[in-house]
Length: 320
Image 1 (cartoon, rainbow, N blue to C red):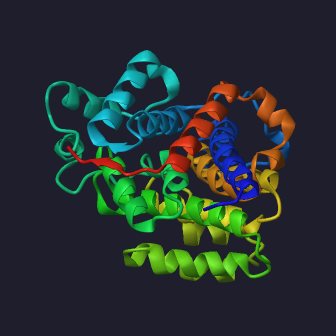
Image 2 (image 1 turned 135 degrees about the horizontal axis):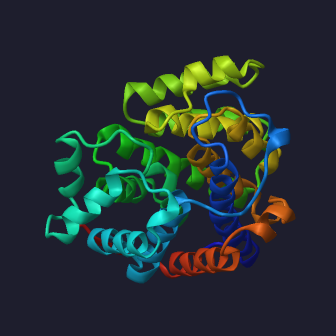
């Protein structure tokens, strides 16, 4: 059993991760798709987030409602959110998947019909995966299962599923490290080793192999060429984790670095913020960002409700 102080640390990690994800999304959304490196001196923060946070909220709401994972419930939550606020910046794929599900196609099959039997390679499942890492931070087997099934709703490709699992696991490791309070001098390399053990597929393992060298690499061009900054999961999930590790002592600097790489800035910064926020906790996030964040109080309340589900046990799982 986690002692009371540990429970407070765990709750702080839940809030830090979810608020961190939303702030990264909002911060990066101003520069999404830029081909050049972004000057961090030009960053503005409106606090307005995109579909990345919208779907992260949907994952959380469904996990809370069902006290764990229920695929149909999560799919219907995504659909309801999209219909309420379709202007959040959704790509073309998810709305088509949602239409198929509403017509009667199973949530397990809809994304495969749209993108072919292999499914989408995109990072849309990884960008929303933080709540899975939080809820299952001490159960890597269930974490992978839920990350894969959650991804299946919109992104059925194995690489997309694995990206969601790796992002979830990185969040989980950050939570567990915060709870352990052990000396962290070797943490970046320890986390890379753990992620490499966890990862499936050569593409992700190769990216993790590159990171140790890149942690001292001053050239952003080299970082971007080796890790990527695009919309595919394999071109963004490792990059987000790298941004956190390179700037492990500062939530703010990790997000600024993520945005400075250009490309899919909102999603990479959202994933960076989720991992860094879990590691540092809510108080490490700049107050000016927190106070300006859209629906900050609601996101924090969801984080606490998810934490309460965790503290009471999470035995429920439905793949129907």
